[in-house]
Image (cartoon, rainbow, N blue to C red; front, side, top):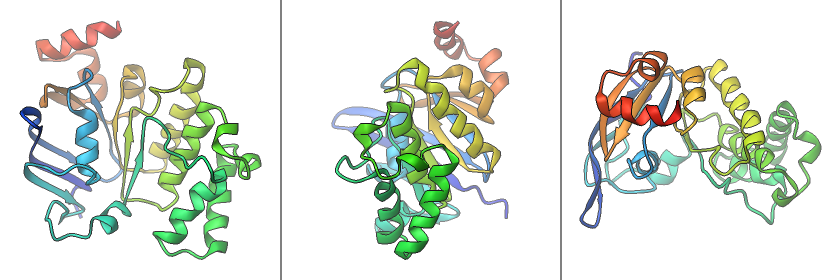
Length: 244
């Protein structure tokens, strides 16, 4: 019962001759929100992508609820169906309605009937105020609305783990709040989340733990408020001073 939802052990990843992740060990427990912080190029997005099996690893192991999903024999599509991933750029299908963006994965990947998928999607879209927009195409939504729709698509299948990759980086400042508000709701509902973010204030407010990555290495990790207000490592302090 104490098995972490996600366990990364000795993860190494290089692109060509450039090492990006250099021996990452990390666990995320059920109902925990862990925030990855660090400069661009520190390895945050790559770590999320290898967790979702969108990138291969050079060494190490990845466990999802105790199952070694880095084993080359696993069915990667079945594993990804257990993980929700929200990208920086929304990645909604532009030629589909908002409703179909949510329902098609439920039907085609998770086997729900059209009626079941529609009912679940409509309930979730209503919850975030997009029920009245369910029949429009994504380009008719604001950036904040598109990102909230992308989050709903990711959580509609009730995934074991939710990965959020800098989900506010493409938004105008006035739209950031509505997206972060939805993440706070998900946390309150017990979601297990690993997120890369540059929103330090939000990480302090919503994350249980913060992990500071620098050049592919975890330099420091700990309780969010403690690490972000009183970091122990000089490199962490140097990074956080940019946000003061």
